[in-house]
Length: 106
Length: 528
View 1 (cartoon, rainbow over the protein chains, first blue to last red):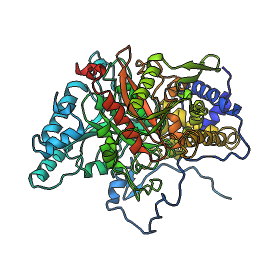
View 2 (view 1 turned 90 degrees about the vertical axis):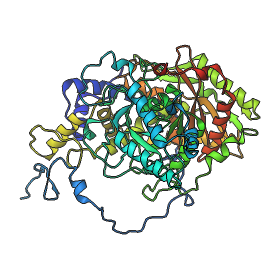
View 3 (view 1 turned 45 degrees about the horizontal axis):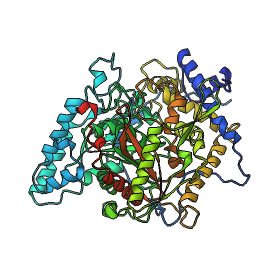
């Protein structure tokens, strides 16, 4: 099977996806990605008129079936501490994270 | 026959006539779960035992105490003469991709294993408001990414009640298995490429993928936001109609939910099919799939016994006064899977960026150098292979330099798929169909392990269901026979936008006309 995705491009994708893979996972995933990319090659052979529009969702959103926009009103959540409590690490109502990568401007 | 094996509409009637209590119904289901379900899905489950290989394993979380309390509330309301709701006392299970306040809501992923939902999804809220009793959260493919449930991080994954050596289908496999095994009369699933209809067909139950926007997605952990549809799984068409009526309708918390009145699906159910135009398409009697070795495409006719069941269903409908329209062209059906490989992955990758180990869910316990390192380690440990594959694929095909070639092209192919349906259902067109009758799946349930790991072949299990998701149109799968291996065969009805009432009517007609056929007497293996 043709290899559309080389190891270097794959490594770049892994970086962009904020993943970190062991070699075994990387091998499986790159093989499956290449298989999927081969499968979607079929799309390239379909003749499409230049003016064929995209469909971003199947059912058209007409005015008649769309809901009116909600009022732009502040609705406080009744128990914010419950939400904060879901964070793996929090302190005094704040979510705690390690250092955020940054560069100091000259 | 035990209470848990009765249809929901009968249970509701018995309850209102005070012949049974909600508590008795719930206890009957809990007892069935105890008998057939085996150990629930869990992280780091260890070796599978011979006993594991015989059980259903539909559940991740059983909410037994909550269910008993809800049932007692219904009984109290009944005793006080209050109306307890249209689904009063009817137990149901929920695919663990819906948030339910106070329950673990895991998406069958390690990354959400410790997440307790702070709010309840609209369809679940509506079920409970109608008096239905939540039994628990059932297993699925991790984040719904699969057609067999084997990718769940919570093992043992569900097995097919008709033969536990086979998969229940997916991704709503726990839902379909729980309904087929009599653990609950109803289950709430989701369908993004066939994830309600395919497991319904594999497990011999009814599954409804409503029109996109018919049922609110609020509280559903998102996969493909332009494709996801919550919907019912049930053991018969009446129950499915009852449940759809309960969960459908506009929701101010989901802007994509349609602001359109919900018809009385039950009232229309017995109107029959006289005068309905039902189509058959040659494009749904063959499958196209890539040869793993060469990458070239093979076309194959469907197994004869599946095609013959569909043609027999058409005959029954014709006998009841429907007009059968043959040779309806649906030429873009074969592009459904390749287009789906692109569109769903882009949407999945976008939806999965939120899982980062910061706000909720899993966080790595390894030391990290900075925030980015935390993201990478958390996501590597928290996600299984299928989510990772979808993230990578989605990022690749939507990257600026490839987007025109892949993503935008796939969205234009989606237009062609939608046009197939528009032409078939156009009331002024050549075919003027009320419904298209097709097989639900190209095969019956495959064996555990037969496809798992091959992400391409696994996806092609959805070939006959995914076009409806691209087009947004509704579909119903109903059981219609048992194949030579003793596994259920499903037939599918597809219709125009918001035509669920017609599809359910036609499905009910097929169900009634085949009521006395010998295959309907056969029980799933785990119940024999």
